[in-house]
Length: 262
Ligand SMILES: Nc1ncnc2c1ncn2[C@@H]1O[C@H](COP(=O)(O)OP(=O)(O)OP(=O)(O)O)[C@@H](O)[C@H]1O
Ligand SMILES: [Mg+2]
Image (cartoon, rainbow, N blue to C red; front, side, top):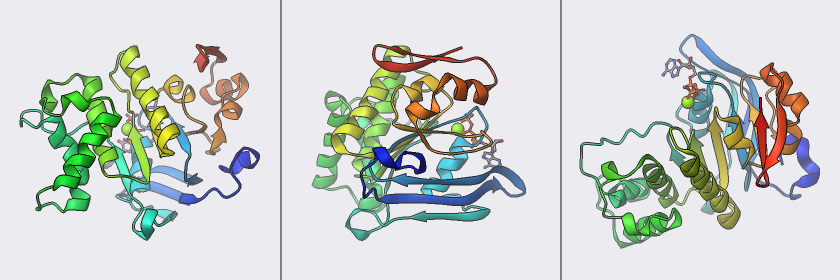
């Protein structure tokens, strides 16, 4: 895929989303500029950057809810020739915790785009939603109240909601925020598995360098002077990371996973 790694990639990678010289902002406020990259079908791409740099803003442009102030974002058709569909796992879950929704209710929301807002979900929607809960290891929790679940379990329910839409691309904004190490590991391992076993295209943004480099195949650093998607091995040399962050950074392996220390 991605620009710098043609040799490693399947010959006929299908571009799903292409950013060309994109500038993003709000009103007169410019947040990001000079963004050019392509997301290909089957990619597992991580975008890392500090708080406030514009990671969520970039995702809004990927999802099509924020129009570029300059440049162009193009999207391929989705499977079956329709619109490209996204399974979006937002940074802050905004579901009302007072209202007593079950885990299954929350996952069914992922079907609304297919069902239509004012129609009742049917058997297929229930079946797909239960299957999505099973995919994230929560088959037994369908009838539990969302508000009673742990943070890690809620994140899994939100991932199930994203999967229930049968998306072309799974988009995750800071998927491990506020998690303890075990929950963080389980969440990222689940994303790995969805990518590996279902061939799902995954785009994940995070400010947590180690969470991302231990899992993705390609990475880009938002806020760097030369934003570019690179294979993770190439982008995570001590020299590159030290230059990027302005402090000495070493890179090693722990339990077979890439880890940066500083
Ligand atoms: N709706 C908005 N209107 C105006 N400015 C906004 C809006 N949303 C975000 N911003 C600004 O855009 C910049 C980037 O915000 P964004 O949320 O994309 O950063 P982020 O990298 O996702 O941060 P974090 O790591 O904290 O999630 C910030 O300065 C933020 O204040
Ligand atoms: Mg954000």
